[in-house]
Length: 453
Ligand code: GLN
View (tube, rainbow, N blue to C red):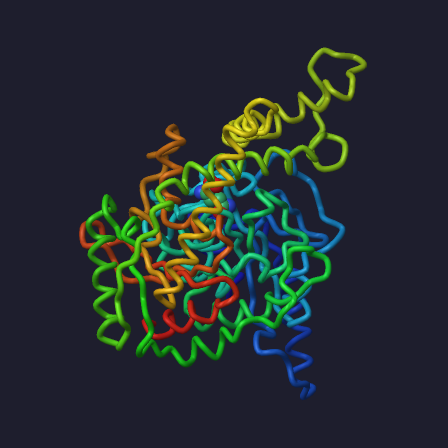
């Protein structure tokens, strides 16, 4: 049914870069046979899933939305993919994304943008717009995303779906094409909070292949989603990210969510996180720094594309590398590599990268202080509903501003979820509520999300 749905609507939505109909059907049939034979199967056995194209899938093309990886077929699975397969989940295909997960609209994909199913002339968010759009358009019941600065939560908000960024280290990063290693986390994109919890539980947990993986059991997310009780829970509204300057309809839905939480017995408290205002600036130095280092491996020798410089009969390795990177990387990727190498260069290191790391520490301290007063924090997920395709494409700063509410969680490593909280009055488009919890307390996201669902 999902393959039929993809065939019917993906020409218009373009959520997928690659569909593996044969592989998905083979897995589904094998599960049917095992079920018919009376075998007890894992909870999600037979439930199809779409996977963001930044996650390595053995035998299936993996491009990270970039031309430089065109034609690369990973010889191994990411740990989370191994877990999906072990649970008997058919993989429908790979979803579209901003190139190397850099962006908030999926327009930076080298393979053309994804369209928001709510209005095809609008962006589905980014970088994981393909995963969220696939779920919103009923092309897949579940999808995998990755979130470095909001790429699971912001697409969830603007497509009216659910998206979780787990605690840093909660889900293995082994087999993810790294954007910024100290910020990246994979997580679920779903239509309900309980679905997200079920998927989170499956992909989460310790992995010896990832040195930053937390060696502890997955928090009790499914139980919390089912319980969904917020009586007596202290919910903090962050003064600095309380929706001031955000679209009126987004603000109105946020206020409504707070009223609903109070009605359900939560105590609403205002807390201040003064360093959050510098989060965006710190992030856009730390991310390019790490990205410029991570992307150095795309040297025209090891993966995908290789382009010889025009008119050179016997080019040097350096010339091939330069020509390949020139042809293979898009503008946004080049912009960030240049920014990152500049920020890391000797003489500037302390002034930029060093300063940004100090801000990062201050943000972590703000969270620690806030979580002494409250159990969870809430914000609107994104400043606006889905904007028009092309609207912010030529203005990198305007694009970066989309991440103002989501970035602090990545900088501090704490978990966050975005759940739909209604439609903005002025345009009838979905808006999202972000819930944040202390590190390793991911179950609280689901407790609150479950109560509101
Ligand atoms: N919009 C953010 C960026 O461009 C999000 C990145 C992400 O979470 N992958 O960096």
